[in-house]
Length: 155
Image 1: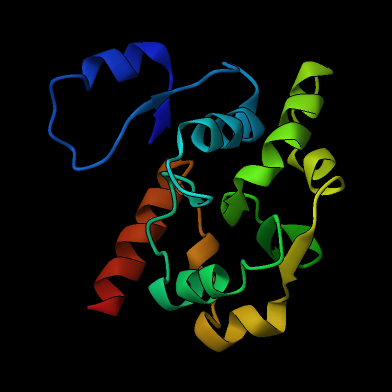
Image 2 (image 1 turned 180 degrees about the vertical axis):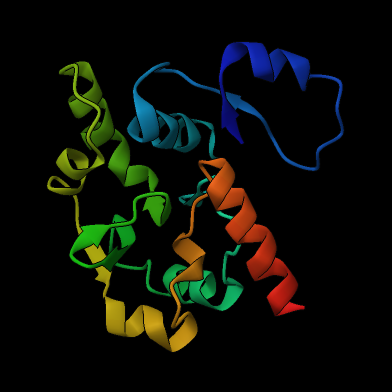
């Protein structure tokens, strides 16, 4: 888990079953978090998902992981837009993330232009997740209400 310094301190004595890494580039959005996760990783590849995605589809994630060899990143693309926080990244992305961040930019798309990406297209995603619920984010009270309704419907 990548988080800010203050939250990392509050988790210090918790047994989460996961490592906590501090944001190296605070305020630089998802790209900063991806960079921090890659720096903290003990493996060549990492799976990055946002903390506000309650309906992740394990089969889709396994599919993405299975596509990683020969690529620096495996990124789903819906309606032409990459889903950077539902992706697999290699440590080989570190130089590109550092170059973008050092230039004062934080767009993941700039990093993706500099690495070998295997995009997972919509027709592939729909084999596992036809409703695209894996990419549903909870950002507002209305989203929470919708998530609760979807969760009850799935039971």
